[in-house]
Amino acid sequence: MEKKDIDWSKLGFEYRKTDYRFSAIWEEGSWSDGELVTSEFITLHEGSPALHYAQQCFEGLKAQTAKDGQILLFRPELNCERMQNTAARLSMPQVPLELFLHGVREAVRANAAWVPPYGSGASLYIRPLLIGVGPNMGLRPAKKYEFRVMVTPVGPYYKSAGLSLISLAVSDFDRAAPHGTGDVKAGANYPGGLYATRKAQELGANEALYLDAAQRRYIEEAGSANILISMAGNKLVTPKSAAILPSITRRSIMDIARVELGMETEERPIDLRAEVDSFEEVAACGTAAVLSPVGKIWFDNSWHTFYNKGESVGPVMQNLYDILCQIQKGERQDSFGWTSAVAL
Ligand code: PLP
Ligand code: COI
Image (cartoon, rainbow, N blue to C red; front, side, top):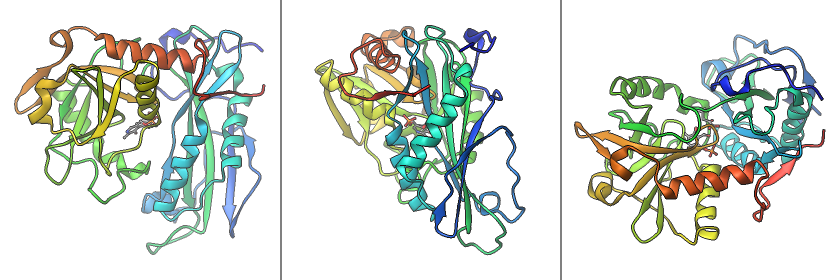
């Protein structure tokens, strides 16, 4: 199969129209089989709860090409499980695992020419969406839903390519309330962060870092990624909070750290000001962010730097990044059984 004629190395994290998307409809208690469609447009009723009350959610995962040409998915069943949890929280019907996987695989298979080749450094970003549609006015769940899977080839999320340092600025705004929807992937969690991100960027940071909304003490997460911190004693620590998105990348990296690197891993509340001096290396992680080492964090009117004064990537994050990417690209024995090939 001929790949599209694209300079894959120049891709950023932008939308690029591909040939097909998968769409299934839920109505009167059941899902349609779903089908591939060519139009990138969705015609929505003006009364759709997705538009008025943000009754919608999404997921994000990637497909990568292995050396032998196979296209590999990374733990898609966990994205389905999370979308099901989100749907339950937002009073939407759950997409069954079989339909979710079918939609993802079909969208990837049909757009195989858009999956960046092995060694290009790019990947195919897969964006499943679940939206409440149809006429509605009062604050009630929609009576009809569309599950759609769109895909687009992407390069690095943060501007610089490869493994390079980013910086974060602690936000004056909260991302999520303690018993709100921060732990699910509701689209409504994100637009408030656009302003917070802009404020962080005005300070020269790539992204906002949020603290817990109740006390503004404990690290929660960045706008689009969870946080990992290495500490003395070969420890990898990550924030415990009921208000952050349970990242699949983070869960995987914590397993890699423990099993492959023999690190002690811990999920616990991390008090930023009280503990910052014991941070050796810091990183943001997620599907889009992969593992992005954090050189410095802005808070209380100054920059706080980590490994080598924030000037280079430390060995722990470099190692974790390498192992994760090698597994995702099929370059390393996948002893965890995390990757699966899409039948072409
Ligand atoms: N946190 C937020 C707010 C996100 O949007 C994402 C992206 O999905 C993550 C963390 C990382 O999650 P995952 O590793 O499952 O992509
Ligand atoms: C992802 O990493 O898949 C996300 O959904 C983050 C998004 C804000 C780009």
